[in-house]
Structure formats: C-alpha cells, structure tokens
Amino acid sequence: MTEFREKYINPFTDYGFKRLFGEEPNKDLLLDFLNELLKEQEGEIKEISYLPAEKLPISQGDRKAVFDLYCTNENGEKFIVEIQKTKQKYFKDRTLYYSTFPIQEQAVVGKDWDFKLKNVYLVAILDFVFDEDKNQAEKFRYDVKLSDIETKKVFYDKLTFVYLEMPKFNMTEKQLETKYHKWLFVLKNLNKLDRIPVELKEKIFLKLFETAEIAKLDKEEFRKYQESLNAYRDIKNSVDTAWEEGKIEGKIEGKIEGKIEEKIEIAINGLKDGLSIEIIMKLTGLSKEEIETLKI
Image (cartoon, rainbow, N blue to C red; front, side, top):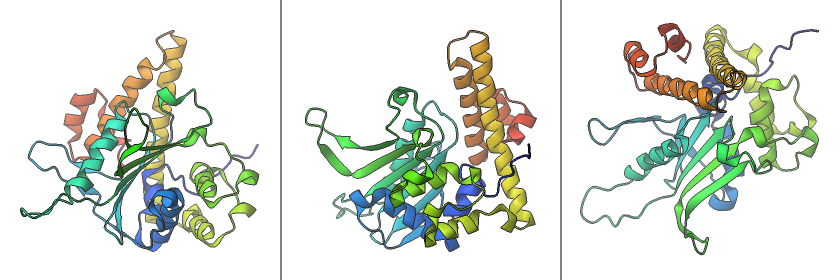
C-alpha cells in the first residue's frame, strides 16, 4: 500500500492553527468561524483585531497567560480561542483563569468607572473528551454561562465559555448542511483529506484549503510546521503509550495517562512562560531530550 502523505496541515498543531487563524492575511477565516460559532449569542461580528497573546500578571509572582489567539471586535468585546491537544487535569480551571485577563483589562482608572464590562468569550477547541462527558456521545458542544442553579436561567450573560469536544463530532461530508458544521468538519479532518470536498467548495473554504496546502509552504515555513507536527505527535504518542502500558499492567484506567499528560502540560506551559529547561526538568522529571521535542 502507498503511504498516505498529508496534503494539508494539521490544525491541531500550534503552527497549523496559527497559520490558518492567527495571521493578518487570514483574519477573514477566523472572523467567519467565530460568526458561525457565536452568531446566536453575538450576532454578526463585522471586524476583529488581533491583540498580544501574552498577558502579564497584575502583581509580581502571579502567573502570566499565553493565549493561542486573542482578539477584539469593533465593539470592544474580547475573544480568546484556545486549541488543546491533550487532556489537562485542570483545563477548565485554566480557561477560567485566562478569562480573568480580558476582564481585568477593562478596568478604567479613576473613581468614576461604574464597572460596566464588555462581553468576553473563550472558545476551546479540544482534541479530547472530558472524562465526565464520555457518556454523552452525541453532545460535542458545551456553552457555559453563569446561571442560577434553581431556575436554570442565565444570571450573567457577558462571560461565555464554548467547549468543542472534537472527537465526538462524526458528521460525514454528505451530512454537512450548515456552514457551522462545515467548519467543524474542516477542523477535525483537514489533514486527513486529499482533495476539497464538493460540499466545501465555497469561497472561504477554498481560501482555507489554499492556505493549508503543505506544498505551498516555503522552506522555513515547512521547517516550522514539521517541528510543530513532531511535537504534536510526540505528545499524542506519549499519552497513547502510557494509556496502553497502564491497561496492560492492570493499573487503574488513566492513572499513568494522567501523570504523563500533566508532566507534558507543565513542560509546555513552562516553555511558553520562558522557564529554563533545567528548571522544567526538576519540575517534571522529564529528560532534556523529551523537553526539547515539545518546543514549538
């Protein structure tokens, strides 16, 4: 059999995701995706502008945040878009922590500020399923707002979290009737396709496929993508191997997997935060070589 060679980049790699959605020439791709994802809550977003992805803490000693994508629209509302490749024990805590930065940024110096805030959205595109959601095989999207427990009514509507558990999204090309579902299909299957499906031959998707074509990357772009792809594969392989070994040895399901994932996540975040490899080695117990493979 002929080995399958990917024609399009993998959106779940850091480089692939940022190439598709994080560059100024492709801003229309992110705008279209956000409009399809949030139109029922937000209405039409007419314009977005990228903001610095690194957010410094308010006080010394606090942890900073490094977003995958951070942008604002014409009304000053903020959007964080995160892509998460593997399980993280406290990922929901992390998204809540990240949401505090665009909230705090809105503070106005002076006694006349009345604390009125703009909407904040955090969109998490997940390449895994939360353990507590495994039994809900058909539900892949979770929209979270502050709500009253008794009435189930939204108590505060300016802070919204959207979680997309992509492994649960299993629509085929022929089932794609809405643009929203087409976007999810592309995100999950882009690197597995060897052609543009007929159902996706719309202007915005044609541009996405053109941007994602590996053959059109120059030498330096291709090098960066390969590094990012190798890091993604190493992370996935480490998690899969740990899970298999834990299963074979009869250990509690997910015990080893969780430990390995947590170490990998600590290492990745440490690299993003500028920690030295020596410090990360002490924190995680990973070798220098293992940490080097996680560099993007």
